[in-house]
Amino acid sequence: MVFSLGGLVGNIWHDFSDVIVPLFLASKPLNGKVQFLIRDFFPWFVEKYSLILKDLSNYDIVNLDKDKEVRCYGCATVGLLNHGDLGIHPDRAFDRFDLFRFRIYMREIYSLPPFWVDLPYKVDPRPSKKPRLMLVLRAGIRKFLNAEEVQEMIKKNGFELVVVEPKKNVNLTEFSKLVDSCDVLMGVHGAALTNFFFLRTNAIMIQIIPYGHIDNFAFWYYGSQALEMKLRKIDYTIIPEESSLLEKYGWDHPVIKDPDSVNARGFEDRMKYYWYEQDVRLNVTRFEPVLVKALQLLKE
Image (cartoon, rainbow, N blue to C red; front, side, top):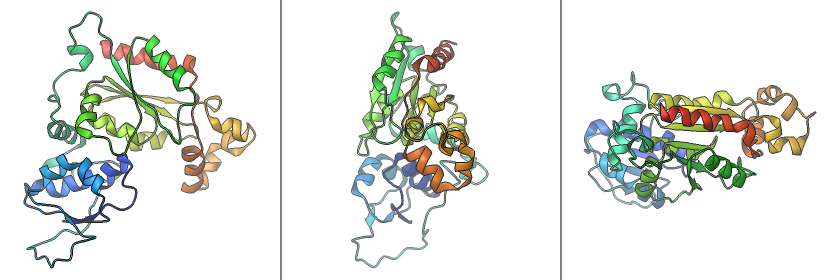
């Protein structure tokens, strides 16, 4: 099976959407009787996802960027096909596989508790227990400009807080267990929310959606997948006053005044303004009901 690690690999959403999920769908039915030959080889990728790759293939991986051997195979698959954005369509997958079952597979690979085990908050016998919320703090674009205020507000509302910053070379064996120990995953729309694969059934994903009428994209890239995996989701869409774009462009600029006209210009303008230029200053008073709702859901 020949495939490339080129493109946007290094962003965990693309790691899964472009490589891991399509590779799983193509190779899992072969029960390990397949060898992976990789172009645009990244050692860090093979190391990071080694547990998955070793489960899917019984053979050593070949780095085609350096390999000089002539290799003969009875058959070969060249390239990977995905089912859409971080998706699995049961009608196209072996054994009608779906994202929920893929989440179960991930739990098995990383030795997490079985999918039927209840949320950490529910199984914690301590009288003083608090639900655990993982807050993703982005360091680049779409970051929280008032991260300390957000953290204090989360703790004030009765959550035990776990703060993480996304890193490409994270040890997934350890990090998956940290995510599994949390009841809620919260962050601004972005790749680190892909760690929802390690949450337990009925855990909650809180997605902060940047300004710009991009709610549909938030649903296509993360929201629909969360629901398919039997997670719960709460969306919070920021208003102009919570966006760094307002200070930069002002109320009369189309970026603020008429985001639909900006989106109509096409992908490049939409990405430029609403993905790459925007940071978030969360109005904690406006946002607080989201945490109240999350707490109510966890206590049901």
